[in-house]
Image (cartoon, rainbow, N blue to C red; front, side):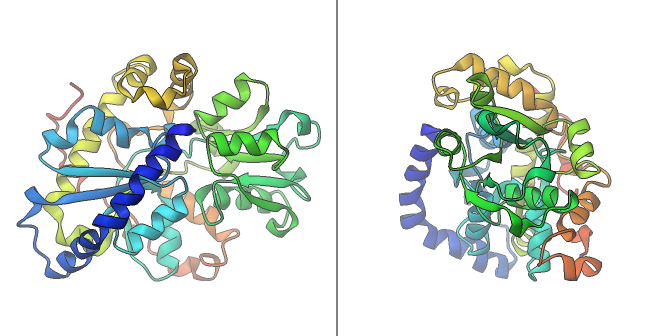
Length: 356
């Protein structure tokens, strides 16, 4: 979408000019183990595509004023792909990422400790769409061989899920072409110009493609039923994840941020798609408010009501990753899922912080 590009461009000077201090905050403060200055600290959170409906809670929390009400200064930045968002967290340029939980498992296999502190979604919210002109040729992942498949970027969660769907359906991931298609207008353009035959994306891109007849839905992981059918269980996806050392050293700050997110999750569960869409920036609708509202409606059941990790969800994620991931597969038996997420902060979120 146009807005994704503009926000990303706006974020660049912030990253370029201010992240030296950000690196110092997330690394040296963590080493010092003190949270005494938490009230004055800015928490930079990178969102893996801030205008995607799957990550809607991040911007909605800001729009509702919950970060300010919790007394924490949060700066939201955006990066269209989760793999890049993950990288800026590892480098210490931001303190948190709103992205897919599966990155915490993948990173543990690489020797890094990253944990989800608030689980925003219990299913991916991802959809495998097929260009209408190719719909007769691609009816399931069994047909992926020889095709051009779009993902946001290599190493992203859409890449992970696409590789899994291919593998369990008897297609080697090397038998199809992985195309970096991004999201929003870049993904739509890839469908339009034949750059991809099919691909994995989210709302509002899905709504834009299907409403115009450019693509058809093949696999729908916006619902629990669709996710279980595709992946064998719930697949906790959108989350707020942070470096374990930062979390341990900044518990007061993390608690405030989590309180704000939990309050938003309760607000979402108590309001309609129309009410939710009305709170979001007008630019997110890309000139079609009705379509944007529909995309929110189609996806909103994916969200948790309280920020709590769904039972057995992490196990599903590990099962998916170890089926194809060269990083996770050889270390699957040593992965400690208990270190990839924590319920410490969501369990302490004030009950009085219900939707208001």
